[in-house]
Length: 113
Image (cartoon, rainbow, N blue to C red; front, side, top):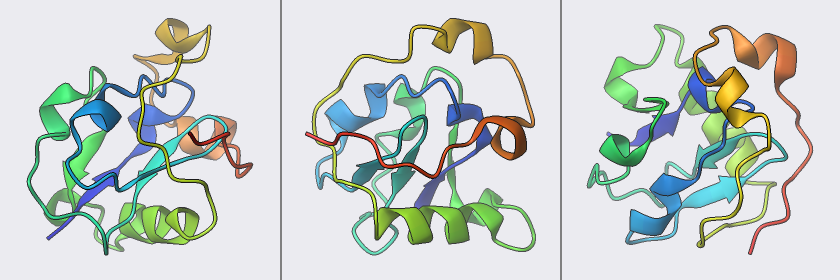
């Protein structure tokens, strides 16, 4: 099992999870974070840190493994991030919205550390 970042992170990207990760397995996109599934040690300390409940065990992923695929794909091309940055200025306006990935997701990389 691994953990995956899901739809709720899009345009929120609070990054509280990054500070507690013991293996630095988070990768940063412009408006989304992902977890590298081969680096995650399944400790779960990141899950309760997410204020929008965007981190889930892959056992709770969609039937087609959508989030595992997305996390795997983008962890290979986005920069690693090990320190909490500043969330987007409009993060609070998006924290309760659903279905954000299809509308707001950006495949552009973030700045990393």
